[in-house]
Structure formats: structure tokens, C-alpha cells
Length: 155
Image (tube, rainbow, N blue to C red; front, side, top):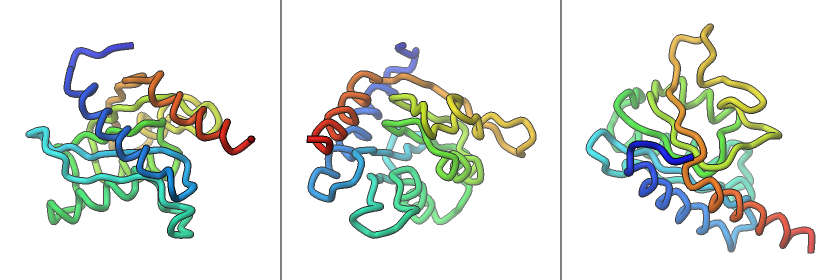
């Protein structure tokens, strides 16, 4: 599914670049970027759970942290989070708490996704903030990167 904003396609390319940078670490290839209102990348992240022995070392968390540091504020209420795989509950919760208004995502995560597949944390009406979701941006590329990774692990 393509979306009206052509920047989503470009931004997903940046997230895919981050995901590809996990090759040497053994981490699952997931990448994320946080983009400001002017289209500038404020934060980048890729999975680093294995590399850093950190269960919170998810691409989204790292990109959100970097963007907040650069802006000098925790509210990212004028930013867009772009990620190659649907965020898990932790990452979706972090995006809600950071007041991010938009989520652009590639592939769905039918096992642990929290932006509409397993859970819908980002649009949970009982929370104090909701995120607009733009799914399936460059979905095939995002999914193939993950499939190739898991195929290579199974040998």
C-alpha cells in the first residue's frame, strides 16, 4: 500500500539503511529514524540488543533517545517515527510517551506488533496520546530483509 506523502518512501530508505548496518552484530535487522517537521533526520537507530547485551536496545528506542537529546526535550510532538518493522509494546509505548504524532512502518509483526496487529498501543483510547499510523511503506523490502536474516540463521 502506497501513501500520499512521498517522503515516507524516502524516509523508509533511511530506516532500511540502518537495518542493514546490523549485519556484523548478529542483531535482527530492524532500523528506525526520527524525522523532524522540516524533514531532517534527528535520530537514527538499529537493533543493538545482541551488540550491547541490552534488552531495550531496539531501533526505535535508540532513535527516539537520540532525537530527544538533539532537541533537548522529551516531547517529540512535531516528529515522525519511521521503522522497518511494526513496533513492539515497549517501542510503541515509548513513542506514545514521547508524544510522537506519526508512525511510518514497513512490515507488520504478527507475533509481537503493537501498532495494530497483536496489540494497538499507539491508538489505545485509554491512553493520553494517539499516533497516526502509515503502514506497509516499502513493506516487501522490509519483510525480505527480515526473512533473509532468519533464513540464514536456520542454515
